[in-house]
Each structure stands twice: as structure tokens, then as C-alpha cells.
Image 1 (cartoon, rainbow, N blue to C red):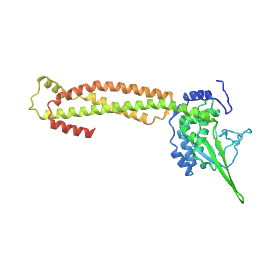
Image 2 (cartoon, rainbow, N blue to C red):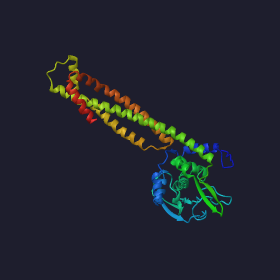
Image 3 (cartoon, helix red, strand yellow):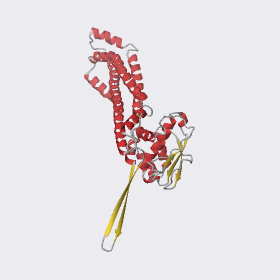
Image 4 (cartoon, helix red, strand yellow):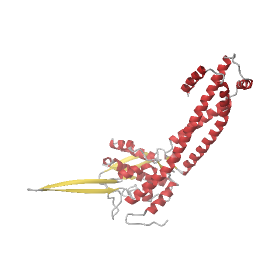
Length: 372
């Protein structure tokens, strides 16, 4: 694809194409809850905070952390290949006041494999990095996204725009919105004999490689994609709830069947219609409800799996989207099958109910409701 550069870097058409490309490889993730990470950084537990950032990016790595003095200038020849955290000046020097570097080893395991667990990654930050936690999180998410792309052998693994977008798509878009700009205001007052003059100087440092226009466009597109995926997730969650409600009702009906049949066995003096008598006799078969109860148990087990899947679904990929569709189809199939088996039990309860006293029916209702 041809890259169209404007005065700030690239145009939004390029950003749009990059997001589409990354969606098929890294997917898109729900925004990270940054409160825990901020707390760790403010508590001077920077290593633990960085590990949380890495973990949310899908990198269960071990962080080897070291500090450099404030104002340190990164050197690309000291083993840290990833050095560009902010826009640079004409001489390639960072114009921001924070350093955060990640060394990218040549033997990096492939993303998502067991080899990534506790794999050592060297990270270097400036000693004053905790002054702006959201900015530190933003730049570390960017730097660790280099690890993500390199571990995938992504063709754009060294592309800084793709790296910024990877961090955004893997859950750090809101953090980067808050932390990508640091505004520092200095006020100086000169006091004279008859008057004084106050001068206010404001310096804004922008971290990352996306222009404001690029960032706003990317944020809107990523949010739109997330909304579509979350809508499918919520639909699946609703269908699970409907099936759970259906199953609960059918389970109650099975308990009614057993209590009513037991009641009739203890009250044999009743006059029962001949046709109903034939049906009631068949209800005494030892396995009359076995098939239905076995199906209910299987359904309960599957519902636990479905619920676990939905509860833990916050990273959306093409594969996960296919799983959502598969679960939706399975839920529909289970519902139809359970209704078919339920008709037999429901019909039996209707017959039995005619010969059960109002008092016993009420007692049964209270008892079964407390059980279910």
C-alpha cells in the first residue's frame, strides 16, 4: 500500500488500513482497567506495574528492570534495539522527558506459546518515571507492543505507527488518550519597584508516533470495532440466560412430577379417570424421567462452559468470533432438544395435578422454589 505522508506523518487512510491489517493478527481487546497499574507505579512497584501491562498484552514474561538517570539519552548500540518512545528532533534525539526501553532478544519465543511464560525481557526506565503514571503506562504499552509484533514475526514489527496501534488495539487506547500528552506549566514573577510582571510558559510533550488527528481517527475506529464484537458477546450472554431460565423451569417441573406422583401413591382412594389411570400407571416406569434428567445434567455442564467463556472473553479475534457463533448455534440446538424432551414431563404433570390437593400443590411450590 502506498503511504501518503502529511506534515505530521501519515494520513488516516494509512491508519485505517493498518488497523484492518492488525485486526486479523492481534485482534482487539477491551480497555484495560488501569487503576491497579497506576497504584503499583505510585507505590514505587514499577516492575510489578510493567508486568501487569505485559500480561494484558498477552505477554506472561519476566521483567528485568533497571533505571537510568533523568535526562538520559537512549543509545541504539547498547543492546536495546527499541529506543524511539516519542517523536524525535532532527538529530534523532527524544524530545520528551521520559525514557522507557525494551530489549528485543533474537531468541524471542512465538506469541502465545508456553515458551513466553517467564521469558526474561530487559526493561529500562528513567528514575523519575513514576511522576506521570499514565504516560509511563502509555510508553511501556508501546514498547512492549514491539515484543508482541516481533514475537509474531509480523511484517510491520519495526513500524512505529503499527506499534502504537497495536498497543491501542490490545486495550490501552483509553490510557494512551490520557497519557500521550504531558503539559507542564511554569510561572515566573518578576517584581519591580513599582510593578511586577508574571510570565506563564506552557510546554506540551506528545508521546507516541500518531498525530492528534491520527489518534482521534484510530480511537474512533477501534471503539466502533469493539462495539460490534461486544454486541455479539452480549447477545450470547442473553441467550445463555434464557436457556438457564428455561432449564430452571424444566427442572422444577421434574420435581413437581415426582412429588405429585408420590402424593397419588399415598392417596389411592381417589377416583381417577380410566384414560388418566393408564397414563399414571406408565409414569411409574423406573426410567420415565431418566432421559430428560440426563439431558438436563449435560445442559447444565455445557452452560457452565458457555458462561466461563463469556465471562473471560475480552480479547476478540476472528477465531473467537467464530466460537461465539458456534456457541449461539449450540444453545439454540440445546433449547429445541430440551423442549422436545420436556413435553413428556410437562404432560405428565398436567395429568397428575388434577388429582393433587390445593394444599399439597402450594406446599410443593414453596418447597421446590426454595430448592431451585
